[in-house]
Length: 270
Image 1 (cartoon, helix red, strand yellow):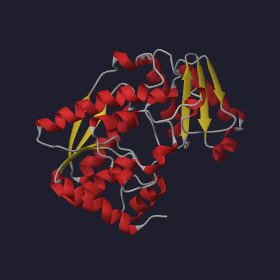
Image 2 (cartoon, rainbow, N blue to C red):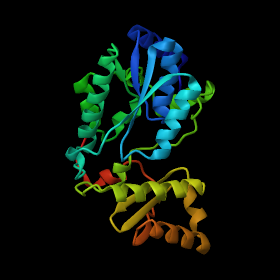
Image 3 (spheres, helix red, strand yellow):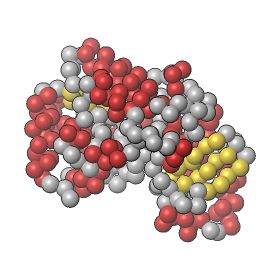
Image 4 (spheres, rainbow, N blue to C red):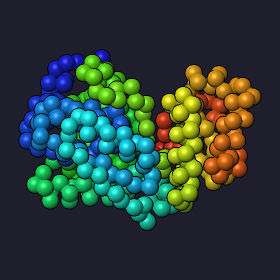
């Protein structure tokens, strides 16, 4: 349960930084952190959104809009798909974050900002997250983790204070839809993004399209599965995703599970 004193501790910690640059994806965690940092530091906050081929365009646009509406200085940095992660290694998240946050640190130092922050929270410790190693190596500050905020805490506090996207479902980069060891191509990333956007627009907020070349394996929330068993709807989904380039369209019978591609990584820990 959320403890108000923990929020006071977060504000005091942020005030001690004087200025900061926040890696801002537009997701719930980074939005709450940005809101709290603005509460603590006002104009001492800079939000930076990194745009890559594996970040959905709609999420980048949302991040820009949120920062503008909050009146926070915001920068957009476009970066390519680097060769280090082109074949989707199982430590992809480490390599990616090492690269992205190195760029952010350089950008911060150019502006005389000595603290780069991210929205990692206490629940992230429960999953396979090799990227957290990169954050530690680079000295990235994770205030929500330091103050032991869980995802439930963040959502509750965001709702209480009118943070604009407090209802936003969890999301992850499109690389998490592709099996480890498979070459990443721009056409496949585009197919995944189009497919998920189409399903979200149909009202399936929690959805993933796991992609294995010609096969799209869709994960819906367990409670949404009963909505699917209408012949017309199933035909429409199949036809649309095949129109995006898939040869076969299937569904994970157990429903949506965070990080389901990690099942093949036995014994792996962050």
